[in-house]
Image (tube, rainbow, N blue to C red):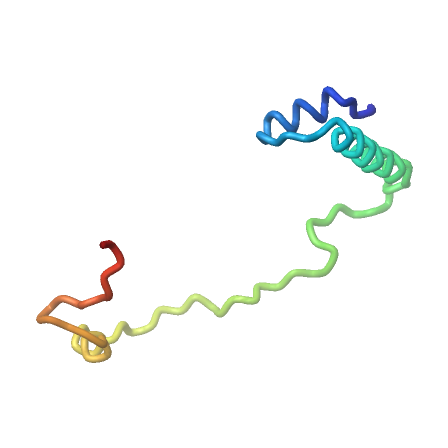
Length: 95
């Protein structure tokens, strides 16, 4: 299946892109090159290859999810940089 100029124009219109006629021809050539490479890959015998989602084995890199005691409200309030009663003052972000 080859990509045509109309295919390039359709995809460009969907992506709201504009290309010159020369750019369309270049893109058509590059897309056809990608498709011919995929066809070459399809020639490989993968009958004995086990499907994988990653090339390398994946391990969980996150810390274990453990319950911890939440500091008291007063401890949290004591580290707030600017407080007014039970409220926190923050820099103004909207004029």
